[in-house]
Length: 320
Image (tube, rainbow, N blue to C red; front, side, top):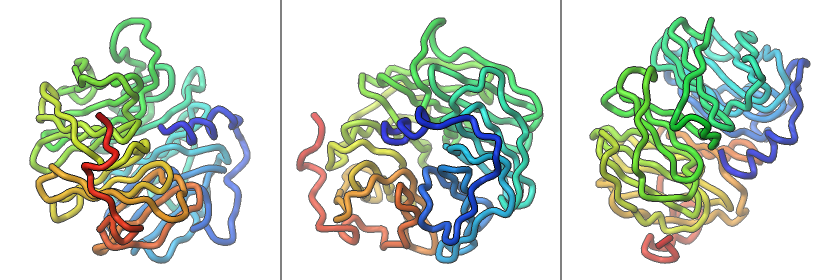
């Protein structure tokens, strides 16, 4: 979770009121997005959940029982999904995000930063100060688990799944972890970096990509044993990455950063949007990229960094 988003979290209160109603949900601060079947579900501040079937027309969810910051969302199909946020809030939807119920307010009210369900039963939560928990019954009950060494309290920023089904967690101070048993146990990874890692994704060829502060990108094998540093073309913090249908990778970050790789995910071309708005998430839809951030949904742009602003090559201004 990027610093500007953490600022929202620390400033937030545990809210019992329903989500704020907006006249145009496209302009709400949105920090995460997930695919629900062919549609998209985005979440953000004030309990806002935005839904779209095509990436162009957006509507607000009809019922959300909290008005705090929602930080992450995960769907297993077109209907069933979960969202998490401030104060240990875990929301559940059975109708594609139209209506949500408060499934849990986890003990201790941890700041939750990421949620991943791999099927309707198995899920993982991670959050601030090393919080992690696992469910095998669809979120009805959660078992807190230790990630890393006893006493570690590094923020765990995201959990994601690789192509072979293994799970990865990225966190503060270059910490990374891998699980091959659906989150029951975790092995620490030697990423070779000390800066915070904010996000990651499993590539379709089995490799794993991690990203974080100072524009840092790490490309690893499926086991997470070997990592090499890629040039992202920027020193801005990277907040989200996704792989496109053609094999390229797109990423976004602070100060309007947008970058696209080649098909081998070896070289990136980066750019900054003229508005320099912080970007928190992205999704590919109908051949275009949709960007999400403090100003809401930015309508689809061609999946080319040059479409955002004049591009600069990845070899320029890259972290060393």
